[in-house]
Length: 298
Image 1 (tube, one colour):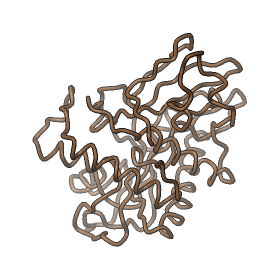
Image 2: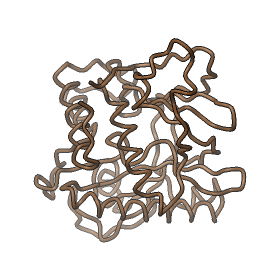
Image 3: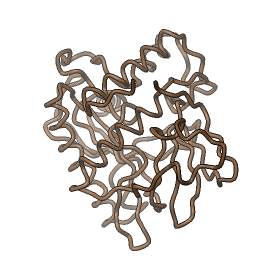
């Protein structure tokens, strides 16, 4: 049975970051322990109600993609046993499927987003300007329409409670330098294209996704944090996809739609959501994990 964990508690370990979803602890040997909790963020605010088992599902689907794309780019996983670093008295079963030990990298300060379809904030920007992150798009595109080619549309990395903002590629160059900006863009689009082709064979459209990257002490680029999860991506069932509407999805759009429907102003604190939405969200995450990776957390 899936476990539930809203917030990790690991006495004796050095908690260095508690993010919207992940709790991160420092370990010896320039390593980190990353714990995917069951917290859910929507519109950059953490909801008060956890989604049981969500962290396990996020961790398992990320691990699946890290392995599947290892031939394209190295990732942050060390393969070390999580149970070996847990404090005495902590139930290892609570962390076995939701935690990983990773290399400690220097984060690239940008959200690396690939879009293959025109939806979400990209659709809003296109309606207003005909462009997205400085990229002019063809006229007459409709909501949810597939783009002629996937595009790289970076955004800033926001702190908890703040909103990410779309930025141009030139802004990324200014922030991290031309070579690293090009490397991040190339890796983002290469991984997206590979993953989208694979997902299509499983009946899922990956409309867009967000990656995070880091570098080691030698400047080598790695993908890190999470990868192609329902938290960082829009997954659409291929059989119900249609142009001109916001298609149903396997991701947290289910929660976003509820919050929009109740008129929340998208400013913290986020409201509670009913049990039916929590259960429906967990079911969508579970279906995505099963369809894409063939993993069931029964």
